[in-house]
Image (cartoon, rainbow, N blue to C red; front, side, top):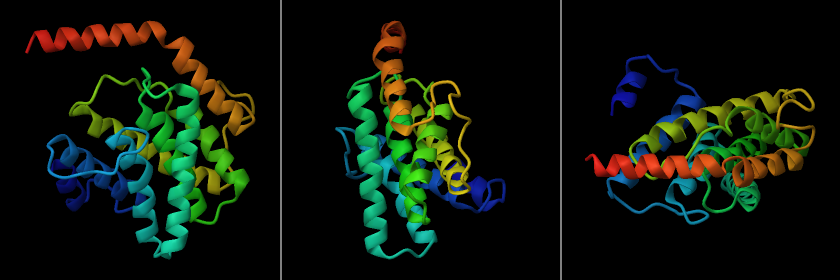
Length: 210
């Protein structure tokens, strides 16, 4: 509610990024309070929100026809599934950020006329930006996490549409979208093993102290 008020008061811009963030926050809070059903994706309601809502918002703002929006949504889901195939279904990384939001970035690129190269740029930009976000279970903080991820997705998409991608061989982003996705998978499966146990321990401690 406060984010919506900030938007009305002019503290947040009236643009795609803010609109998408507000919609995903509202959807996530509704999901957490069990106010209604959501479309699950890869076994997660939050993934479903992030992979679809930003693309749908972009389609509405652009007055895109239903077929183009549908194709953009399919692309978003396919890219997200590809990332999930590398990271695994359960991961210490926030799947909404590294998978679903990456898919959303690609869907927005397609929706706004981008081609295969620009879609690849979006993947690489997301790989350079958001992979460090960890998952600490389904909780109220998820609304903030997914708004951050969606903001990154819109930014990455707009950069990609301007033919801007992170420089070649920058960090884990690599020169190729498939290589970037593979690197995210290695980070999740191998690099974050110790982090997974630490997060689980902190979550258990938090529950005991309630």
